[in-house]
Length: 230
Ligand SMILES: Cc1cc2nc3c(=O)[nH]c(=O)nc-3n(C[C@H](O)[C@H](O)[C@H](O)COP(=O)(O)OP(=O)(O)OC[C@H]3O[C@@H](n4cnc5c(N)ncnc54)[C@H](O)[C@@H]3O)c2cc1C
Image (cartoon, rainbow, N blue to C red; front, top):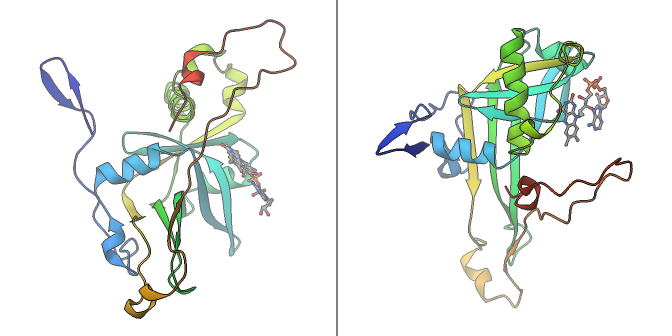
């Protein structure tokens, strides 16, 4: 991703693509596997909920959580008491999966039904962020990733709140994306069947903001909320 600044274009992200490894090579329908940095980052930036896979005492877990991204780092955060974060801060191997469903693909046969989607899988180990300035910046990135404009509007975390919060940094090194687009792919002889076929597009919609009933004063709805989209 390159952003224009003045007459020169300055590259803000390292532009090299990800290299598939034995673990991240998409095997089923490999043409849907994507390793271009731009594709991976766009999928990560379109969402803020991921599923974290890890194992504790030989038991596998997959836990949903929020994330933020800056450059080649994905940040996770939560209570310092969280088993997930305590486990991952010890350098336990983990995965992070982000999924967007774009449509239901309705084929003429049950077998060829599918889903249009964009997803990313990240493998690696996380680093516990301890340095206070980096931790604060990671929380800013995290908050801004979920809702751009929010950080400057709200009270900043106190020292006590920082202590109660664990922040993990997962580098984007071993990464793959997989993307399906388009209509159903039916068997040739099935195209003549009298069955409706096509795509039902799906998307997340933004509704009217609901003010907190416990508010002590009325505030105008901030512009970043009015214009929220992903
Ligand atoms: C959309 C979304 C965003 C979230 N964002 C964050 C975040 O940013 N930070 C954060 O710390 N937490 C977040 N959570 C909550 C997170 O899923 C965990 O519940 C939380 O981190 C507590 O983890 P833990 O390690 O204490 O739970 P554990 O001690 O690991 O949980 C014990 C067991 O409880 C059950 N469990 C735990 N969480 C869930 C769940 N979400 N749904 C169903 N069963 C569950 C599982 O069976 C699990 O094995 C989010 C949840 C959702 C759905």
